[in-house]
Image (cartoon, rainbow, N blue to C red; front, top):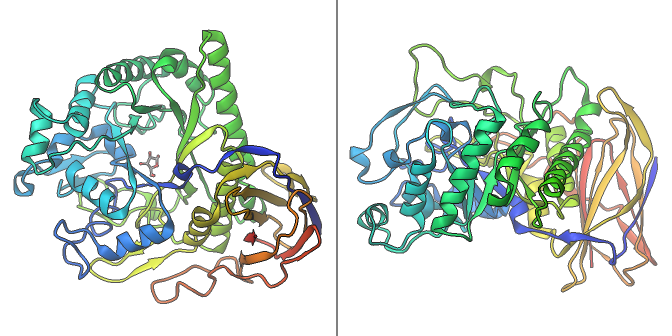
Length: 500
Ligand code: AHR
């Protein structure tokens, strides 16, 4: 098969936003405890944070980290997590049927963010709580001093306010599984009032209102419409969440998952713009795609404990990712970048141990899953502006999405260095695609680096003993001749070609 792509520096979608490369740490399973926090580990610092995890977070290139949930936040009392650790209560976490020991709270998390060099994205509880508790947390975090909660932060050892900019107004409030789940109108009012009050403290906050937990939710579309009709003027972003997985061996549909992601983004954008027009608003609401990944939700390891069993940090959602999963993760980043005009932030859910690119053994080894690599390479090299490509691709049929383009691609162009980075997936299960790139607007480019993630066995997964067998390898077929680049892309593959 062959596909042609035309790249032109004039066709700019928008900037490559660092916040596209966010991730997520929830009090869930071993994400925090024995994940980022493991005082017994040889690399642990005074707070108990693993230094080796921080190193891999930096290598991954994560920009923002959403915290503390997720479903967890909808029953969370943030005050439990401040002050002397020995005096903090243990609580039931209803979301994950676990016990929360509160060894890590907002102050520890903020110190971890500083060490990891990431921007925090804080979520408030709008499940069991409301406006007042959100204001208290905001005061604790962002007010300099001289008030009850800001002075508590100072007593707890942090003189300077954290000045957290991004705040999520609850989590997945459309989901019946959510503690404190609400109807759209109820949630829209609560979110609007919470946002209005938070802006009285700081008008410059960036506030994310909950959109749908997935495009398959029965309320999808209507939820966004109702919520934004209530909250439009008070918020900046609407959230979107999407998880994909291979069902019944239907690899072709799984590889084409971003057909759904593209549709999701475009539908939310259209709904937000419809509310804008009807309400005669001038600003635009953009998307915070603050949960996205591959997640095999039906597998046993995704089921929380039950009955009288309320463990601390159980093994939960520890999906082992294979090569095909990594290809889909790479293609989801292509979809997010392609929509950089309206997707202004995104979070890979999650970061450590829980549906994560980084895995740890308690007190022991650390390793990268297959999904680590497309994320790290995209975060490192996609710079400057996202280009709108003209793609002429063969199509093939899938059970779930009908005919889909076999090649999916996006490119970035850094006007400062002149580098063009092409990111592409071959969604075919069987065929190579010979990619031909028309670089007519970019004279004199050469291949700087070309890497392809693929494996004859797409079910290959990394382990602590062997995490490198399918590291994206040099793609030696990538060549430039005149104003055209050419590369062979194997089936079930993700590739990055840097031209400079
Ligand atoms: O990321 C895992 C869970 O997925 C989050 O807690 C929730 O928001 C979503 O349903």
